[in-house]
Amino acid sequence: MDSQRYFGLMKETGEKTYKKIESILDESIGEDSLRGFIERFMYGRLENKRRLRSLLVRGVYQAVSDENWLECLDVCAAFELWCLADYLSNDIFDGKLDKCRVEIERDPNLFYMASSVIREVSGETLMDAARKLRPEREGKVLELFSELVKDAYMHQWVDYTLKYKGESPEELRGRIDELFHRRYIEYEAGNCLGKICKISAVLFGGEDYQETLAEYGRKFSAALQVVNDIADIAEGTYDLKNRLLTYPLVLTMTKTGENVYEMPGEEVRKLFVRSGAFDECRGRALRIGKEAKRCIKSFGVEQREILSSMLVFIRSNRYYKMLRE
Image (cartoon, rainbow, N blue to C red; front, side, top):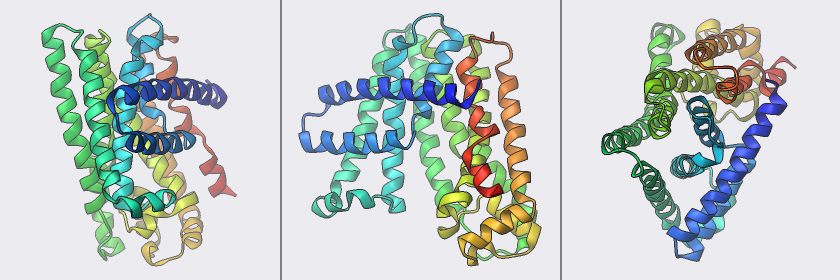
């Protein structure tokens, strides 16, 4: 599948999901100012193509069910809501809410309240879907959702503890595999997306495939996070400024012996490419992406179309081109 088809599916899924979210918010939140703020934040994220969770849910649904995907729209909405709450919490702590500066000054508690309310609505929406299942499957969904909540907080904890504290390149070289495992495999988004796949499989009657799909989610998100960290070097340098120990930055340090955390972003970009760290990081993301693809090889071509399409971004994207240039 080409990237045009992938982004077309993402756009369609996101737009329908966010319309569903609007109706859920109208029913769940009576306060106009709070609902209005949440919707503005939500559509700001939509502009940034933040629709991976709903597309992932749709992909799982397509893999295990032959019904119209709109039947899973409530679950798509539940996980996009959860994602929005997660992003809002992160943006509060990361200081990324410049566009909402006036609202922050007027009511600082609005953001914390919004994040809490979104999480509550997300959980209620998901459990409404689970109540239609047999009791044992409903209980399984509740158990997995509780684990997802824990994993999401662990994700944030890792981001705020895995920071550069003056280690030498030699010290980091000895820890690079451990750092990679913690950030990309064990505690980062991998667990969260893996749980979303597993919960969706249980909800949609694909219990026989829940472990396979969960492993796909873990592998996919690990590869995606490597790509996102490459993209940050190419365009944003947020990780560099905040001294996060990402694989691309640590690998560049260990290859060159240079302290990238004390260098300007443009110099780090050049060093990242010239040292070979870029090619090595991209290669590792591609290898993990291939492992994710192998997880779904037992599904038919049409069944795995969306899940396969989500790997397109890992193989080729504009950030690779930016760095090459």
